[in-house]
Image 1 (cartoon, rainbow, N blue to C red):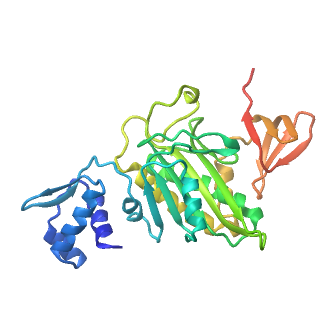
Image 2: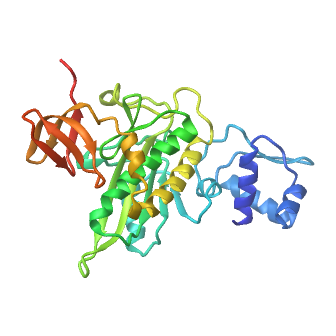
Image 3: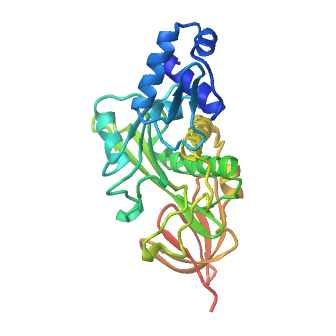
Length: 321
């Protein structure tokens, strides 16, 4: 880590506690001037760091700013993190970097998206300051048929990040939505680019949008959307969720060849055993979900007894009556 990252990590770990410049300099083996420069840069980036003469520095306990260093300082591995104030779409921003040769684990996070996207051209509501909108770049070595498993791995990683930071049980609606208490809290859009020369994948981007804090949802989302935190929310919640998400996503992504995500994905599915309405291309009708196989195909049984495996499509829970 750079001295700026080291200082930020220290202040962030003990928010509200004052550390003298001499104390920080001694701990990190640098000069007091280097500490001062690091503090100056952090304050310019928007961190609410108090600098008191003859006492030292402290990060305000209520500071709520999402920065690249704030995420990187919580990670155990190297990630090229970019944080933007406002973009059309984090997936689109990351595509530009991917086409310029960006390395795997390049990450784009935005405070706000103007044109956030979900599957099937649906929009994803992405207001400023309340959500985590993050896209992650992969350059997989596995086959294109396994690209679906990036989505399923991401869904499990999101659930674990929500549970660790928010203390709430999270469930997965096949194939790419995460729910809390029956309401959607996260959507995932995975996009891939294929090489014309060898037919393989050039890159895969997983775009993840999480409603972190309570906010006023548009009328059409009232009753169907939820947030991780209702009411009081930890000031560093978004940075913490981002870091845990990336750590867990790394584990599951590297474990795709052995299907590391599979057991947790199935365990968190709330569709199994439910009556649903299927709209999957030419396959439509009312069915019961019987399971999810190791290819993450949804196993359904229609009213006439016909069983089908669904690789994609829309599935809605059937309301009784």
